[in-house]
Amino acid sequence: MKLLHLLKSEPDDTTQKLMDAVSEGNETTVEKMYEGEPDYTKIIRLVFENDKNISWW
Image (cartoon, rainbow, N blue to C red; front, side, top):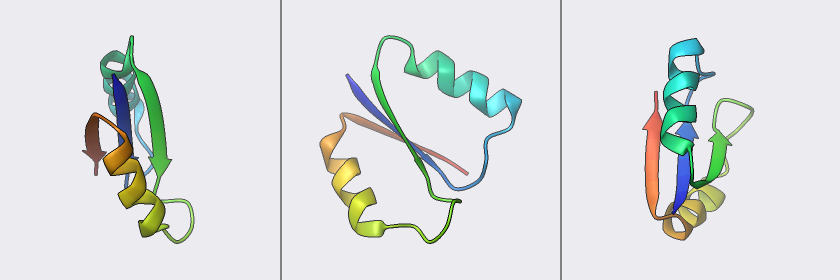
């Protein structure tokens, strides 16, 4: 399964552990929206390319 993690802020230790647990056995992409100006065209493309999307705020 293809999984997309959308990060609005840098993950703390707990969030990173949860991300790692959910990602196990999946093809995972991480989009760091907090690094510079988000590329919303790219984000929309990634949302439709992946089977599941998780937003971490």
